[in-house]
Image 1 (tube, rainbow, N blue to C red):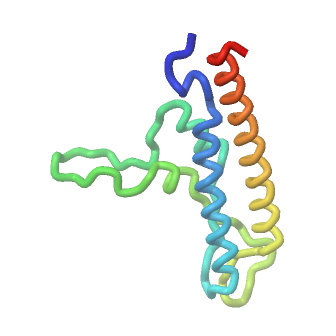
Image 2: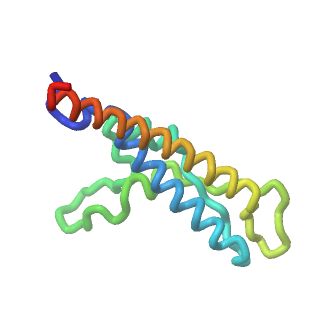
Length: 133
């Protein structure tokens, strides 16, 4: 019988976290669509999620001295961060393509919603089992 939430929810808890971070990045890209020189960013969802599932902390710096500062950035904020290659470069150096950003945002939102619905169903089934239904 599972004893912790990790064994009950599996990969879905981490997936929601990574999807949230990705939504923030894409929203930031959309907000900076008119900023000269802004480079659109995204994360490699599969790479970040698989490294989290393996327990890796790629985003953390190696601490070699007791005086080093801990946790400068969240792992998902650093690992897997990539810049988008623009389909058509703009004169001002901005690499945001609104069509791509909107499409990526909607796909991310749909996948977030699917994972959220799965978790809701899982929680309802656990509650039903605890009530004896």
